[in-house]
Length: 246
Ligand code: ADP
Image (cartoon, rainbow, N blue to C red; front, side, top):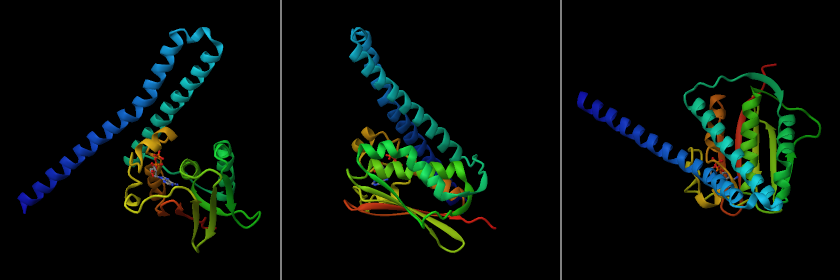
């Protein structure tokens, strides 16, 4: 029995070491792209680009975009590290989830417009839906799910967020009619850095951390998150939240 326990422990340590290496490899890979891009833009500017106003503006704008991307990656890394260490305290409060969805739509309006995607909210007109959760974290969940529905949605598509009362809980669904996810990839999409199509996701600007963050936040609330999808038809993410106790 003692020998068996020891083998298990060694396997576990080996597995952790593999995860650690994989994680570091993924992080440096993610950081490299924007850093090399910035290097290229700066070299172009130094190489005479500065004298041409049309070029220098364009390259400075690109530099800024890459810097924002780096900041986004670092912020996501900080958040996932805290979440995985169980260090993130939830600040539970009563709030209206409908307003939060509307705010998220506003923040993503421009991006949706670029692909002519309509953001639709399915709710009973004017009625607030109260939940008891960490508003800032749920706002991140909504942002990540809705931005994905735009990234992976089709031109002229529709993202629909619906809210329903399922007894003691509220259920929120984010549905798109985009490219969908193959059944074989579905179980893995919540893993950090897991991507179905690496080249496609990367130039869209995701970090591969979004869904891992979403899952941690929802499970931290002792709630559930699920997904169903069919290739080329669309995807629906669904999660629950507690209602306030009165
Ligand atoms: P990323 O930054 O790559 O978007 P995420 O963790 O947010 O990382 O998502 C992981 C992967 O799941 C994505 O790379 C993509 O392949 C897939 N995915 C997520 N949301 C959708 C969606 N709404 N439609 C199709 N595929 C999706």
